[in-house]
Image 1: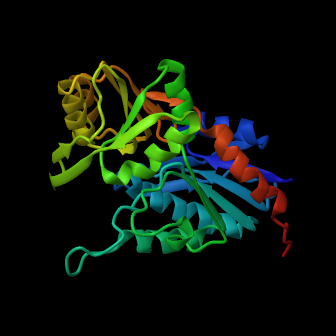
Image 2: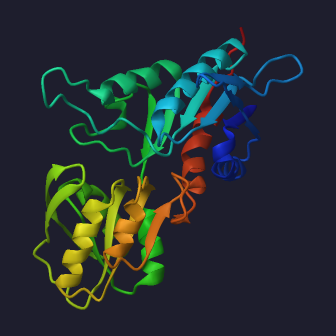
Length: 305
């Protein structure tokens, strides 16, 4: 198997963990930003100016706008330099939330970005993409191998190490699938809140009809962005008599003061996977990603020109 994992300097640590778990070499893409914000990128070619036939590109798509341009430049040039099969490993996948036009003229970014990625790559691997009105990732990214993994089982294992009989709570209906998946791992009790959103930072939460009194509660979700939903839920849980409230998320976006907002609501621990690099990272997803990646590499025929 001749393959190479490419990454950018800011994600070296996570990419190296994936390379080690997969048993393939890794190399860094050289990047320079000009004063006018344009990028100059350089791929790590061999002595003949070529790349291996099989490439893996690691790029988590938090703060996605510049990164999507990087992916376009890298993937297009890599094809010209010998790459025949390119897999994108994007532990966080951006622009999946807008899956329909709520007002006339709104761009459905899920469809646009999905087509963009399908045109560039032969396979895409991600973790807990934010899918609402579609069931599978290949409905957004039309590829034979559009693979959606979950961080919920890993989060459940971490929670079990900290609490004997925790109560898992999802902050809104959208979190139900992650709550149920995590709860199944250790047969945890769980419930799901209802939420009304009045703005990006203005939410109204109603707790589920389950007793939280004297329980160790863990708020579990796929992503924490502004932190306001989790903070409101944490305060309500404390008011209802919870013994403790922790937070566990797959994607630690934590925009602006989000982490401080959550902690100020009485949350004891904040745990996340390393899908997005953050101080709260407590779970290494490389073994899970490698398990999905390796069959793609082994089964991909090397086509010579």
